[in-house]
Image (cartoon, rainbow, N blue to C red; front, side, top):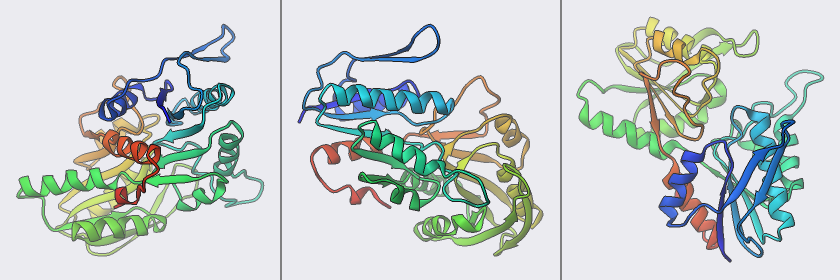
Length: 316
């Protein structure tokens, strides 16, 4: 089958890096708007019988990027594409993955249904907010992790920086313990857990720290950073417990509102994220933020899927 890579407008730079590593060109597609704001799509290239991949994280503006993805998929389906894979480095609406209280939606399942209805036959995504979201799909889901590139970054830092020692990996909540434990195992580091309670959305009250952080270099590991309120409070809590240095890392840098300024003003020395979501250059200071590319991982996964090969080797 012919390999066709189509990029939405959400993260064009990442799409360009992916096709460069694949040794192909982006397929020509016009993704614009009618005068009233409706999304207008036209696939210029012939995609009949092709193996198509739409690269589109559903990051901010979430509704715009999600609708764009669905409409591009519908256009490909009606153009007789053989297979349509949505490459979603960041899966928007993934945080509402269960009924935690009465009369709330499960948007992670809703989006899964919308993707399948639009004609998408496979989803390639990275670091879902909860692993069980894969079970919401009736189509295949390949779930990758940004951990390998993040792990390599910190391993290199440990080799070059003599002060970067006595490492403790910190999970900011109980839900992230499995992720943190896996990272700590590969990094040969200790593990600490922050017990917190969230009185309101995007707010956290630090309650207790389980594990030894005194005189240690702490790396807070999470799947995403949104407002950075929780992250900075966790950093303050472990610093108050005697941590020598505090770093933070997450696969997805949502960084909404005043998140960048909060990080800049915090005790966090560096926040390490991936380019699953494009980093806005004009929305606060970027001085403490390091961005790692996941283009190689996604390109390798796309090639393996296209060739009907296993991608399990890409899992950490």
